[in-house]
Amino acid sequence: GMAALRIGGMLAGAAAFCYAEKFLSAEILAKYAPVLVAPSPMLGGFVSKLYGGVLLVNIVGSSFMMITLSFIPGSARKVYMEKAKKAGDKDAEDRYTLPKLYAEGFSAEAKEFNCHQRAHQQALETYTNFVVCSLIGGIRQPLLTTAAGVLYIVSRLKWAKGYCTGDPMNRYRASGGWGIHIWTSLLATFACAASTGLGVAGVI
Image (cartoon, rainbow, N blue to C red; front, side, top):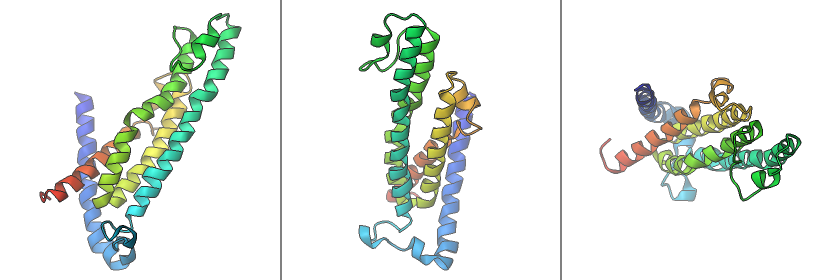
């Protein structure tokens, strides 16, 4: 339905940007900033120097982002445990302490805490895909992959802030329009990785 059309549109847009980057690198950067597209001596010329941006943003930068998100449920556990106790929950200690990932039950405190937990946990569910596709996609599409990394970091932080309001719908509604771009940026890295794969296979 609509979701499939939206995903298709995102992938088509990413594919167009892949071709645009090829033109930009060959016709503009190679002429006016050749040092950027020159092979990196550190990696034996296997990738251009632009690949450094992929490593700094998509790997190092996103790692710090994930650490930031990991603090959210940790601090929320104490806050909502105390709120639950004040609300008369005699099992608050067991409900909110580790190793339990989510708080059981249907109380307002449990729902709000679980929103904080999801702000971090949901990011983990696709983070490996993002990192692997960034490393592969950046070989051929370093500019687009790095741009996708910046978008991914910003949109993830905005998305998490909206989720932490305690209303799951606010992960999109209260993100200032950024929330949807956790998927735009992820799909962009998929497209970049596909571009590298097709290039290795000699298709395009």
